[in-house]
Amino acid sequence: MNDYRNTMEEYVGTAPRTAIDVDDLVVRGRRAQRGRRLAAATGGLALSAVAALSAVSLLGAPGAGPQVPAVASVAASTTAETPDQTAQRLLAVLKTAISREAPGATGLETLQRQMHQCQPDAVPSARLVPYDAATFDTACPADSPLHQLREQNFDWLGQITVGDVTASVRIHVGRVPVIDPPGEQPEQRPELAGKTPGGEGVPATSPGVMVQANDVVVEVVKPDGTDFFVGHPEKQPLLLAELWQAVGLDPELHL
Amino acid sequence: MPYVPWPETTGRDYVKREDEPEYREYVAARLESLRRIAFLLCHDWHAADDLVSTVLLKLYRSWSRVRRADNVDAYVRGMLTNAWLDERRRPWRRERPEADLPEAVAAPVEPGDRGAIGRLLRGLGPRQRAVVVLRFYCDLSVEQTAGLLGISEGTVKSQSARGLETLRGLATEANAEEWR
Image (cartoon, rainbow over all chains, first blue to last red; front, side):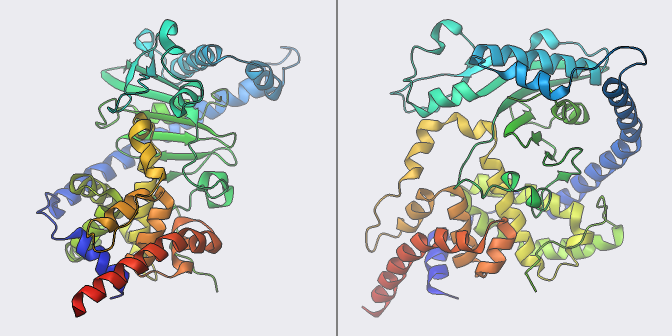
């Protein structure tokens, strides 16, 4: 044992008793495995339908006239947007994608934009509060990290119902946070995407797109740095995960 | 031959029932050491146990594949560290910017202060903290650490340099105390 490890062992000290139970892990693992098998069995049909619809939209109906290149619409939609315009565009894209992926879904009107409460001098953590245009720019100094965070990250809370299932969700679209020197994040190095040990990587449908999903979150990271994330507001198990994954993969959903 | 920490995969992972006893044995044998590593990353036992639970569930799913890895322990430690880094990136982690800001600057380490190592680790950025724990607590090589975290060996060396310097000072102090 090296000296550094000794020092760290001393810091960790005696571990308290844990509630982690192997039997419980196995039961939960089996349950999740059954769910994935069911999803794989039913998801193939859904993906085929999505692929067919995508092919139709890309190729266009016969005689429908020339299609506007997707790239052109992307460039036009993001030119010189204010944060408010970006938020409105993203919400419209989200609603369209949800309706397309889950026809008959209700509760879209419950999606309410949130913002981080700005309290420059307060010690308590910033929390999400309903968006208020009147106060958005007043409390937060323009050069503060929180101001920048609010300019580049957009959140909505709501309850979406599909069939008998109602999912409480927090939907987030923002910039991939940089927590370390640039260029070392796996998502910024496409050759590493999907190779993260233990990552719940899902085969990406487009080059450079990284999809991750587990019991509580679905996350799609795109090559342009857009981070789409859906989780339960209280960090409970996320419902309708397949829907959120499909929504996140919508090419129109980008900053 | 380069170090390849992740075993080959040919598609979705499904655990066979006959593999479960081996999984149970592995978890029982490694649970405490994984909790200790998680604590060094999280500095909170509740968060550490949540992290370990999440990783062991992932491990269950991929056990049939992971058990074939050259170094299962190193692979699982990589899973643990990456799961923690992943959690750090979640939007809800960004909701405490004021609280997180002090982590950018490490508090000065005072000789003989047993809590200094905790302050040192908390003062490191997430990936640097992960590097220090994998290198100096888990005794992984630069090559292994780089492979598990998906970063270059040069980055591992540079990110561990500052931690090494401070840890060396702490270890020297501890040894001196033992001889007094």
